[in-house]
Image (cartoon, rainbow, N blue to C red; front, top):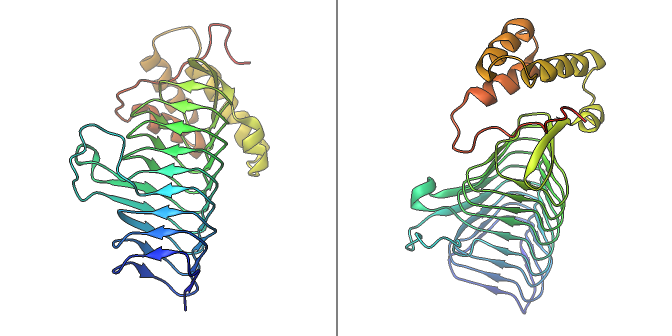
Length: 266
């Protein structure tokens, strides 16, 4: 049975799974759905057509599912879907989608959203993503599995952040970040590969060495980018992580690819 503090307000129609815990002064709207074991610590607002996956924990003063900050939003019945086992810390804001973006903001499983992070409308976030304090995303941003956004970083609308990549603290990202990439600065530049992250996730030494070789070839000064992309595909096509980068680059994008500094890999 759900455990609901007497000061909490749970609207008629809200669906609560088994073992849900709702702390003091929380507010839930009538179209909210909480999975098994979800915990709202206190002073949490969950509104709109919002689904929260099992065993997610939400900390005080987070607001989840309130209308998006988009002047085109006209009250359409868009949704916010949050996966399982996420940790959503204090003052985090997450907004539902809009008609221009597919009507849903979707967050995967096992994420960590630290104090003050903002997930805007129509974003798509993968599994095991970490957003450090006050990381901010514009609308329609895509963040793939295991990516990390450093504190105070900001991501422009429609940017894609590839899997296993790292955005340095206080960086402003205006172009797509390749999988396994490391970007820093304002505006952010590609600063090599996320080697520390790859080692922490037990990527083999040979795989990391191959990724380094592919990276150097792809962002070498000689030839056109398309020519270098073809060369990387031919030389490293049997390495799945390299092909993750190639396929990421080949997919259409509104923002282009974040490039290294003129000095090359750091």
